[in-house]
Length: 104
Image 1 (cartoon, helix red, strand yellow):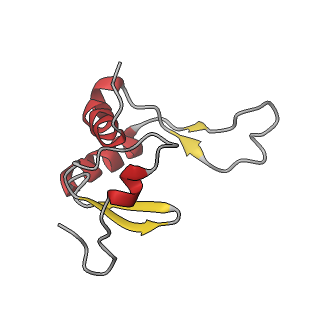
Image 2 (image 1 turned 120 degrees about the vertical axis):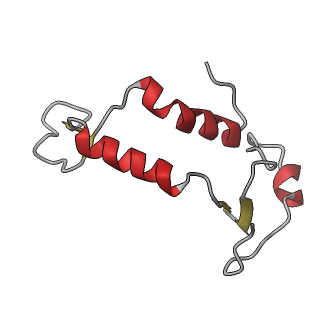
């Protein structure tokens, strides 16, 4: 369902753009709210239960520094949790469907 607080624009201009890969405009809950740049909302992308599952997973998982190069640990404050593939398969599948890409 479209959010009444944002515009609900048609996908015509987006789909007419030949210069980039298009997401799945048939994805349930997808709403185009801005055209330059293209900004989409996805209503109901994840249920409350699914979100809670991800939050619980993060709370139980060991976290590691998200630094990407030697010496960055002192500069970075973020951390990363790497879930097991089977724990987030549903999320990866949903993202792939929205992004209109094949899963491996």
